[in-house]
Amino acid sequence: MALVIGNSAYQHVAELKNPYNDANAMAEKLEALGFEVVSGVDLDLRAMRRTFRQFVGKLDQADLALFFYAGHGLQVHGENYLVPVDAELGSHLDLDFETFPANLILNAMEDATDINLVFLDACRNNPFTRNLARSMGTRSAAVGRGLAKIGSGVGSLISFATQPGNVALDGDGENSPFTSALVKHLGTPGQDITRDLVLVRRDVLTATKGEQVPWENSSLTGEVILREKSPEPETPKINPQIELTYWDTIKNGQTADYFETYLKRYPDGQFADLAKLRIQEIKTAGERNRINRQRQDTAAEIAYWQSIQTTQRPEMLESYLTRYPGGIYTDLARLKLDALKQTISEDKKKGQPETSIALNTPSGTAAPAAETGTEQQLASLTPDPTSADSLAPAVAAVDETQPALTEKELARAMQSELNRLGCSVGGVDGVWGKRSRNALKIYAKETKIELASLDPSPAILDGLKQSTGRICPLTCSRNQELKNGKCVAIKRETPPGSGTNTQKATQSAGNCPSNPTAYGNKIIGRVPTLGRPTLSHPCGRKLTCWGSKSSWNLTCKWI
Image 1 (cartoon, rainbow, N blue to C red):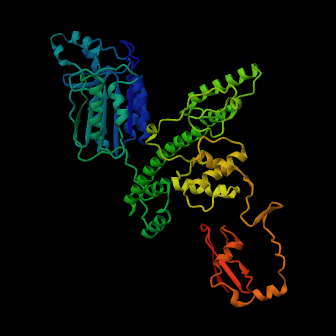
Image 2: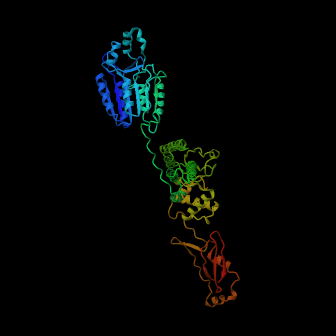
Image 3: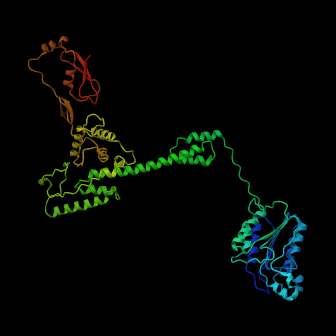
């Protein structure tokens, strides 16, 4: 049960700013703590007595009583008095008729309940004390500053806004420093009232810069907790078998989300340490892959630029600028493009043919004047190899998310693509030799593109992959001829004079050589073959031959 009174609108002295607000704030706070509150503001003496009687009448069924007062209060002869708003106190004789004794409230509370809490924010600088002092003459020393110390019975706590005999401050805000701190800390869940008041004292000292020190008298015999702490929810018991199954499901995951989810569900689980390590590994690997992709992007751009840097075709430079608008060579590409367009424009004005396209002109060899016309020679923009030591090997620009190919893997991939397009390189072995270079040269000639180099590069591999169908013309082997788009065996005429008798004579087993390999290579030809073809020898016996894809000679034996 709680009684809250706040007097601001005094009729015969200056009004106080905060008691009205202090009373309303405390009433709201106490109701939130579960108190039944009897409250009144700006009460005259009759209203104060009526409100107090109403409060005392409800204490019979209460286990704790609380009284809060904000307004003018004074002490005379060591006794404390609360001042209603209609008090004049023109003489010390008016004290018993116009004020309300504080002890009257405390005694009634101690008679009715075992636990009593009193909060007095009434130690303000009081104009009534000056009137009393004048009227008492030589006895004016009996009128003290602030409130006097109040004795309390067992089970009571009396808290003053400042130490006895001192004056409390009204504050600059809507509430006094003392009431503001009470509203903030009173009823902290699970915390004893004495601990609440320690926090109140700290806040008031800070707010008043040490000028006001809240004070209390206590005869409590146990903890008084105004709000019980909410019980923590019980942590569900963890089934080890369920956790083990959960871990087995995610332990091979490749994203950190799996293991972060596990840690949220089992923060102290059996595999918590392993989950944290896996998260760290995945994040480290992700950062490493990001750096590698960045290097690959740069390497792909360099390879792309190397494949077009000597071009005399504006569209190829424009393709670079479209693909890499903020690239390493963007400024150089724009300069070269502007110069190339200017040259073409000047050639048109002079009525000369446009700048020709140089195909694989060796470095240091000038193209004939008749072929190049007024072709403008531009400086090579090949980057200094030493400036890219830290770059990863070049990769195909079209698929920059794939890991970089080694030199041999790149060569093997280009050999495979050239064979697919009909530009035979022989065996796909990753060795980039003369035959591979020649096949690439034929491809470039047939597709009418220019290459800065016949060495393997991701950009060239990209172009090969985008090509479809047969590009290079079909070349038949020895003893074959091209007919209707296919290589067929050349038909040989039977020599004159040979006939049935001669054939029969040669079919004798005695005329067959001991090793038919030479005959097989002669008939089939020095080309790779698949399977084991069967042939008939002029001597009448049958033979079979075989060889590997990378072999130029066959091995034959008699059947």
